[in-house]
Image 1 (cartoon, rainbow, N blue to C red):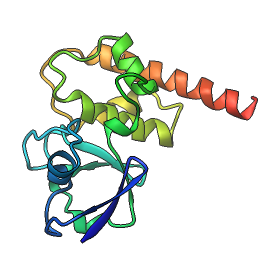
Image 2: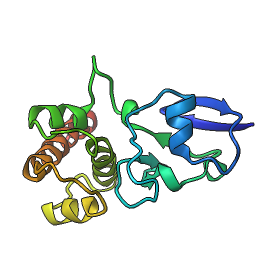
Image 3: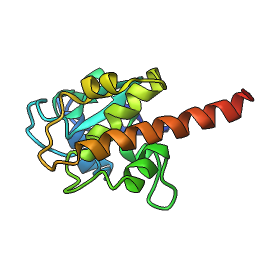
Length: 161
């Protein structure tokens, strides 16, 4: 039995220790935002955040994750109450087919959590591992910049700066 902390909730699973996190998220927890793309850690569709870092869940076995904090796109907000990153992607209409977008959003969230003032160059570099053929790249960049502004404004309001 393995216990994982996913989106702030402790959950136990009976999966084999070498089971990729992606399968546990989708099949056992019903968290379907992370997508199966290539299964080889090459496309980024399965990206989640583990202890603040973007991780490819299709190649990360659950045995490495006990005691660590896992966040999926569902942990950033819900359909009824989307978080800043989700609101920004909606406002900028940054998704076309939507398959790669959850992974990009998670990688962007991890970047902004580390560096809320990330430059366009840093954002582009961070998204480099993601494969996307939809052609919404400029809208994706605008959405990430929009999310960054909202996150900065929220942080400043909390600290009174």
